[in-house]
Image 1 (cartoon, rainbow, N blue to C red):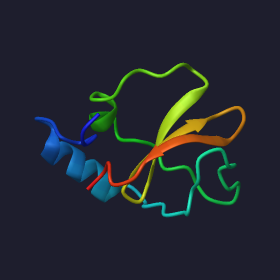
Image 2 (cartoon, rainbow, N blue to C red):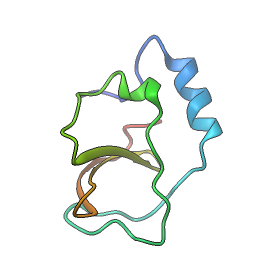
Image 3 (cartoon, rainbow, N blue to C red):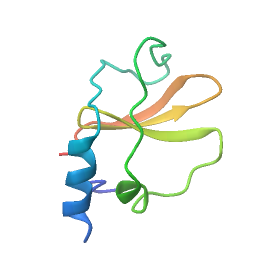
Image 4 (spheres, helix red, strand yellow):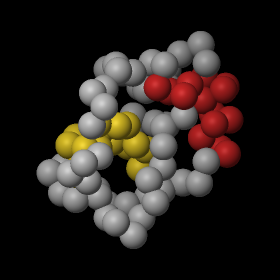
Length: 85
């Protein structure tokens, strides 16, 4: 997939990430997302560069990792470390 923020919108993406409250949790695939940790949504400028997901899945950011989260099961489906520099 390459880096999630590699695009013409790079400066907009940097600004969006700088304004958001960072979340850093030791997440693992096939484990529950911790209920006491806020979900950091993915800026629209990054979402424009990613495949559209079914309604029960969402992209999240955890530090520098891009996370695929199952909303209804609250499960980490997949993650890509260092996708977000």
